[in-house]
Picture 1 (cartoon, rainbow, N blue to C red):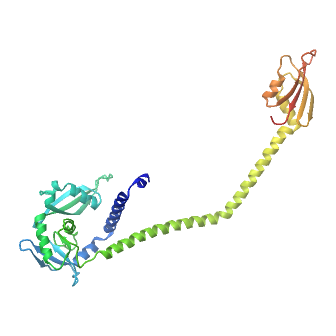
Picture 2: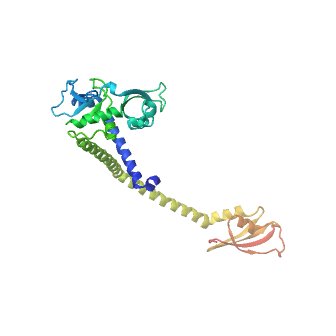
Length: 345
């Protein structure tokens, strides 16, 4: 996300263009091969003679006869091109084309600027272990020398009809289509757009399918939200009852906690048991008096016994300690008198 926010408009445009081309390639890959063959077979097949620089009509090779005003499919003689078969990783057709462009000097015996390249994928093979990245493509690459391409361009300039494709060989029924060199001729500026064949309907169709994809994504998202909302609405009464039960449980827990605390702090017998447990061994309690928030206890303890410290250690608040060390000890021990505070510190 940070990379997208930091990118300039030119970079974003290149990303969008690459995404659009990828999407078009994916749609093209979904078109059945027999449909593409039928579309090419309905074109008027015309052969080019490099020696004479003339165009000669060819008979149709399939049951689907070309239309009267059909565009021209120009057939090049096979000896006019250089054919090589190479092997590449299993990547998209656009990536394969980029690989061929980068390695053109090695693939073809001519310099890169002296040849026009076209390609097609023949087969795809998978490794026996089918490990990721092990698939390979067998790619057929056709190279048309620039001098031959310029002669072809001069012949096309004299013709009133513009080609819809420039094939290395005539298409045969049941076989994959030959290599089309027309895109390479157009990139080199040696062939213009066909005048009698428009690609606008295909672009409109691609735009419609793209918009349909977006609409389907939005519809599915809205449908999932509506479904979740329906489930929430259906469970609302049960959730309301559950919340009421939980609220009552919390109130009951609060009442129990308050009652327990009150019994622990204000119950006489509980306080007496607490004080008895806190007094040191041998201590004898003679008086126990509770008035409001104060508690007075008195009694006798063995010599050298810290009664107030023991009570404080038990969590009780010692308000006043009566020092009776000047009194004569008795057989029961030394007397003491302590006032305890029952309120908060």
